[in-house]
Amino acid sequence: MNVRRVIVGATLATALGGLFLVSPATAAPEGAQACATKSLTTGYQKAGTTVSKSSSSSCNDLNLTYSNDSTSTYGDSYRGFYKTSSGWKGGSRGYIWASDGSHSPWIVLLSDVADGTTMGVGSEIDGGDSVTVAH
Image (cartoon, rainbow, N blue to C red; front, side, top):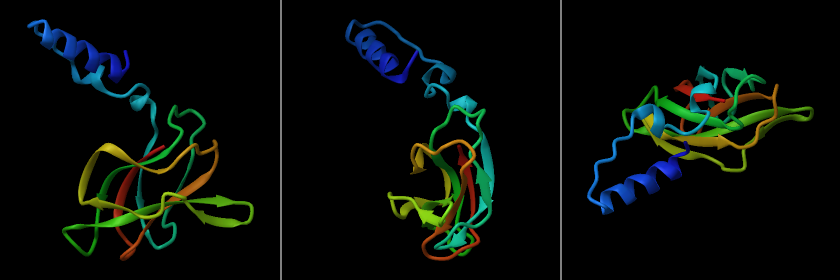
């Protein structure tokens, strides 16, 4: 069951005066449980530690699920980087602001990543931040 059907069903049930409960497992995006996750350290405006896109994961994107700025309690802006045969490239989304903590919904840093691609996350203000990505 996808989230759109759950929302439509809940809206219809509410309009009809009925009670409609959705368990957290049902409300999660399809395939979210099949994503590989990894904790990384950011580089300063470049990839820090890296991860390779898993071929067994159903995720097609590099998603920021958690971030903790090492020098501030506010957050930082993050960008996805990926390695090509000609070197490192920054994702077209640029730097995206994220407060410290867990992110729901996830923040998409790179889209449509091919299996085996080496990826990392860069911080705009300073490096050395702790992040968790789903890929």
